[in-house]
Amino acid sequence: KVKKLEPLLVMEHGDPVEAGVVYPGGNLFVSAGGTQVKVWDMTNGSLVETLAEAHTKVVTRVALAKDATVLLTAGFDGFVKIWNAARYELLWSYKFSAPITAAAWRSDAKAFAIGMEDGSWQLRV
Image (cartoon, rainbow, N blue to C red):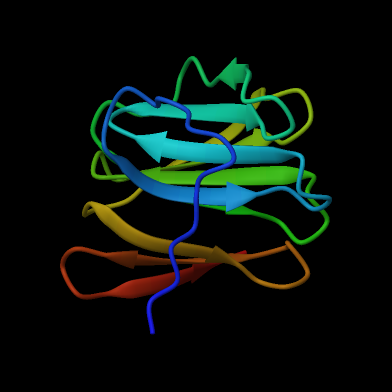
């Protein structure tokens, strides 16, 4: 049996949404689509922040560290970017040899794994 759920909020990202992640506590949601990454307040649907220097090609993944201190974004431009998850400031950028199609933090947030369009994956510390 299929249950029909009515949306509590509907927000317009502006591009097809490729990835998303909810902050601990459930009040903030990060959406990724097109070259943009946006942070939304899920209590009222308002836009909190647009990451100004997100990516030059489609953003394919967002991942929030377990302690919610850093946010990882990855895209078809071959970049992984690490952001301060409270102030939304860019901390580090890493360039890879192929478009990024998957990304995840290790549970201690001291390393991340990425998967690439060429079929390879890497663990970075």
